[in-house]
Length: 402
Ligand SMILES: Cc1cc2nc3c(=O)[nH]c(=O)nc-3n(C[C@H](O)[C@H](O)[C@H](O)COP(=O)(O)OP(=O)(O)OC[C@H]3O[C@@H](n4cnc5c(N)ncnc54)[C@H](O)[C@@H]3O)c2cc1C
Image (cartoon, rainbow, N blue to C red; front, side, top):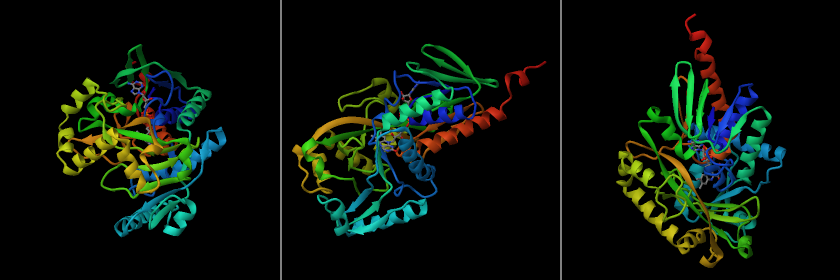
């Protein structure tokens, strides 16, 4: 059983089915990609910003190539535009050199270009230098996930929409997945439940908790989309696992500004005023949440993000550092997406993908950005781990006394 038909669960189900395993993919919504995977920037990331040696860096470099090839082969909209990380001053230009070092270590094509080269590619952008990553692309993420689910079905996977897993119970012989609709027995479970994955992982995740961070977006009004031709990023603060505001031309021609990184008061609370009391109570009971908020730089981030959530003018001011001609009137709000950000008991934002295993289950925690880009090789890796558990575990027949 695979829980969750986002990009990660869909890919794990596909790779298991391809290896001849009987798979049931459970999804609580009535369609795939209703949460993180369908509420993203839709960027095929290159991985120049990722810490060398991290799981994200490895899967991103492979995933970038595989995802673009998948889109071409399956008719999923893809726009191969490249990206510029734009430095405004010498201090930021120095940080570009760190990004260039990371790119080289991660095997990612990227090079620093001067302001004139930036202006030739992006006439409305302003910067003294930029890191150019030609491998960055835009794609239709919901259509991609739907095509992976369809491919899994074509390989024999059963897909059950409207089926919410409540808990995963293990025995020496297998797992029983309790759903609101009934029980399902299987040899092995893969938990790819995104924003709810820590709840299903239960005792396997006592030291971490998902704290949702909302990515709020605005988009350029159609008449002003010409301000941005590719993807423009500010130089990221590498202390946080968020990329900061960027301007992204999507595969459908829309141009997004965002996402922000605002604490959300509910795993699926997508608007500022929305509070999900149960989730909020869970967050308040988690010592890591208070230790996170005790950090002055986190409180500053939350304050900044709150201003941007309340006022598109604040988003416009941040975006105008990249494109000085951009005004408040050029922006309209766009749908938000929440990140399933893992926070440790000590209050640290966990940076890398976390996978935890028991004898009969593989749990995916912290499949944060660039999780879509990583999803094809990462799902193959998860399928491999689930198969290893299948092979290592005693089968019902073998372990029953004769
Ligand atoms: C604002 C934002 C922007 C992003 N931009 C990018 C980007 O441009 N490029 C990129 O590579 N990555 C991006 N990411 C990261 C990327 O979206 C995620 O890493 C990726 O989508 C994670 O996929 P997933 O399958 O783990 O989670 P999800 O897509 O959240 O899927 C989990 C699924 O599990 C289901 N589910 C949950 N609980 C249960 C249950 N109990 N029973 C049954 N089903 C359940 C949910 O309904 C959901 O469909 C972004 C993320 C956010 C939030």
